Image (tube, rainbow, N blue to C red; front, side, top):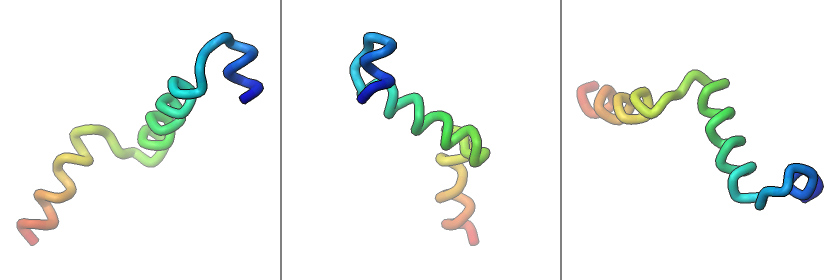
Length: 43
């Protein structure tokens, strides 16, 4: 991947950062991900 080569890092950290950014942009945090199934179970 061109971006990883430019920054001199492997592609793995880039994909991990991307996943984190998507979660933040969607408003889902680690705590939200934990609470969602519990709310579903209570319903």
